[in-house]
Amino acid sequence: MPIVVNGQSYETDEEGYLTNRTDWNEDLAKEMAKVDNCNLTENHWEVINFLREYYEEYQIAPAVRVLTKAIGKKLGPDKGNSKYLYELFPYGPAKQACKYAGLPKPTGCV
Amino acid sequence: MANFETPALREYPVIPLVHAGTMAHSKPFVAKPDLQKALGFPGELPENWEKQAVKKLGELVDESRALRVFLDSCVKCGACTDKCHYYLGTSDPKNMPVARQDLLRSVYRRYYTLSGRLFPKLVGARDMTKEVLDEWYSYFHQCSQCRRCSVFCPYGIDTAEISMAAREIMDSISVGQKYCNEIIGKVFSIGNNLGLPEPALRNTLDGLEEDVKDETGVDVKFPLDEKGAEVLVITPSADFFAEPHIDGLIGYAKVFHQAGIRWTLSSHASEAANFSMFIGSHENLHKVAFRIREAALDLGVKRIVVGECGHAWRVAYSFWNTLIGPFDFLDPRYPVPQHICEFTYDLIQRGALNLDKSANDDKVVTYHDSCNVARASRMGTMPGGQFIIPRAVIRASVNKFHDMEPGSIHESTFCCGGGGGLLTDDLMELRVKGAQPRMQALKHVVEDHGVNYLAAICAICKTQFAKVLPYYQFPMDMIGSVHGLVSKAIQLGTKE
Image (cartoon, rainbow over all chains, first blue to last red; front, side, top):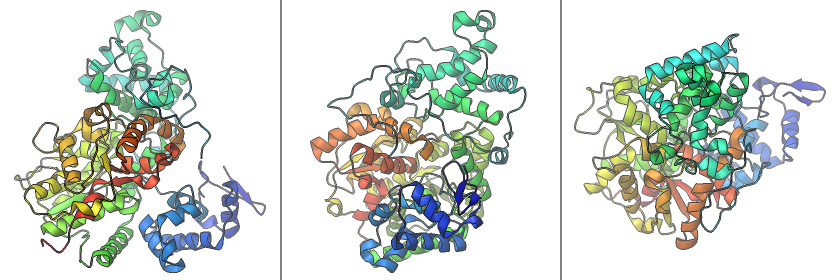
């Protein structure tokens, strides 16, 4: 299932996750979010950018707790909780935000 | 949310009328060739796949007397028909255990019984065809291998064994499920289901040490790869990653801290789960489990404790000894292996933990028996220990506890709806519908006793409930770890 952005086609898997991580760009993230009726705000981008940085270093998305802690530090303690993250990404912060960040879906019992 | 109707919760449980074919469309994503090959399965459907599938079935019934007896002995009494949570939640008659078994039994009869070879139509025997294969793929991925039906079968026919065999046959001709097989591949390439590499694991554990220090002021360690530790803890990688699982991990660490027992996690065996069981693959089961033996020997531990993971405990308790034993290098004075609940229970009995139940006074707790713990293993030395011990740990940590109705707990427990390799988004309709019987029982204790916390000791159950509770109008954070309760109650700094 390829996704087309600015005339360019990108390969994704059955669930819409980017097949090749290096294909990622911001317009692609916006387009993926649009498919889910989600409009990416600055707060969404904080999460997406953190995920990408963490992945760059550790080759995996951060644990939910690591993510909430980091977001709490950046955006204030009232936002450092999973309730806030679920408001941003109702399909689950780990999965939905990873998708827009161009990262593979976390697997296992999560 | 998705495009299906969440089943209603009623005043009392109702066995639904049959609606044929309502779940015929349900099937998980198929694994790509590279995922299949990584597990030693062919990548493409062989030309003579029908023959190969039949041959594999023959090998399996020759290897396993149990499987042959299960296929031979059903008398169609009907005792199982209303016992499967997927039937109760979907009303699709192919989700009645007997019907699920018949999907495989019909092919077995055709090729491996005299009557089926001579008079197939008379005895319900079927040729192996594409249609049959498609039906297998759909309905053997609507069985969570929870074994509730086998409790009620007068012959003890275990549908889980049949569903594992069917999945193994399908894998042997390249038809595998993406979710399970991708995960098993990650254990081989990275060390755990999540794909969490060692530096990320270390970073996560360091972060937890900080969190606990901030919260309690106490230096609770989360050791990784510490040679010479007394205990190796093997836990599902979801405990490092997901909510509410991670509260359980914090609970284990606090228990070890207060008991003063040196423990360690392993980056080589950073996974308790063994999804190879779900696909019936003995070779992969052994390969995944063997990493734990290697880690235990390498770290020189004296005991192995298994964290909150349902099917891992089945594999550990029921299979490890013959699969990766003997464990003559471990301390024989302790159970090999030992469940984290047994471990904590033992410490509570000996007065080694200081638990303040009132720390959990905001909670009214009930307990979900996970299927693989309830029906495929035991804890402690007393019959039913697997029911008694987790409850005893909970009761030592909270003041308010109420069990759900008797037909839905202990050996009659309902599956969470996501076990057996079905905990994947592409099966969400099945997962939601299959949770209905458990949600029905939960509703009663919520209404009658004000229950607001559903405790479990399985990573799959926890993730599944966090996902499906909101479909039934319960809050998602109602689900928690048993050791999450211990974690809250334990009074650090008072015993050590």
